[in-house]
Image 1 (spheres, one colour):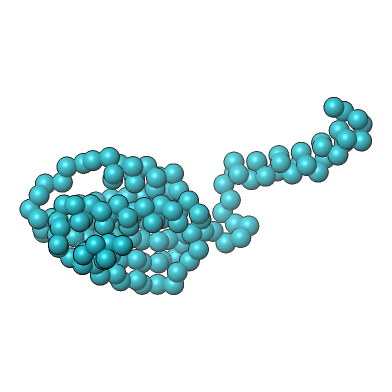
Image 2 (cartoon, one colour):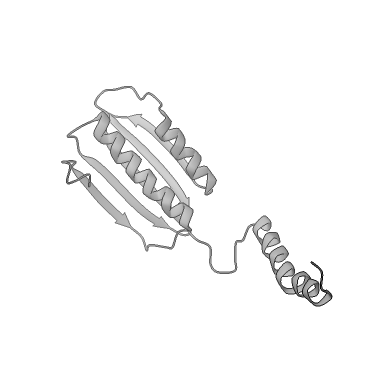
Length: 145
């Protein structure tokens, strides 16, 4: 869409892609979308560089555009992105240097099956399993309503 609207975007990808949890996948999409929107708004017609780097258990996104000599003024878009990334154990950073605005995001890739579950999630799964396999059948057998 952005290229069709006239944006000059280069994309570089390194590393082997890994699955992302659904919320992290959505957050990664929003990082790119917000970054491109901001770059086009604040430096129209200038080239934009997107770097997608896969490392062990991580997705790193970097978007760079010319800063056009403007001072960065924080808005709600980047604050919303930072909050979204925090919710998926990711992080967001940005800087203006050497005439460029650089945004960096890090998101965790999905853990291997059965590993890396959060304790709260494991407790919830145990509680649900106990309810379905023990308490519910006992209540039916005893005629509890």
